[in-house]
Image (cartoon, rainbow, N blue to C red; front, side, top):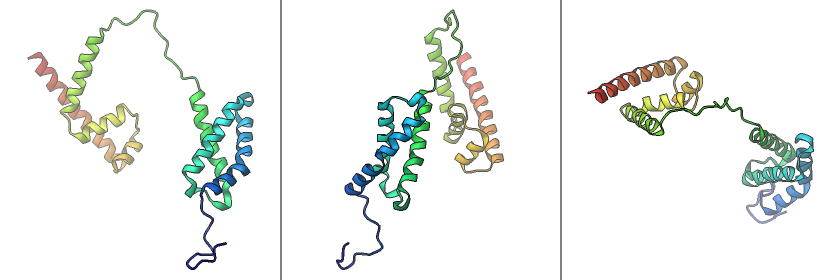
Length: 180
């Protein structure tokens, strides 16, 4: 204990290398066992070791967030997130049925179409472009869009409707310019 002036008797121990060494010694085996029990068919030992190491690395990076009174529960909660991420990575992604015949679409045509879309999007305001891309590219729903924009759901729906209308107008103007 530090009896020097200014040292508080109530301060928790610092989360330094010694703290981490003690955490590692006390809980690394429990984390390894946690993963072995939860990986399919016991998983590979190396997978369990890697996942336990990831949890411990997170504990080191976020050591200020690790509560002294509940270290193991915090580690297990983090382990749950790490395991969920691992499972998502291991899950086979569904692939659409691949046609027997390749498309006859010329890549040059696709590049021109992409360029046309970029040109039309460039004609829109940054807000309209952001709204359209959040919905089309990032797949945000109305509620999520409202949260990102900081408006009500009705406001988000209205903003999306206006952005789509301006996109149609910009596309029509682009088509007319190309045809002229």
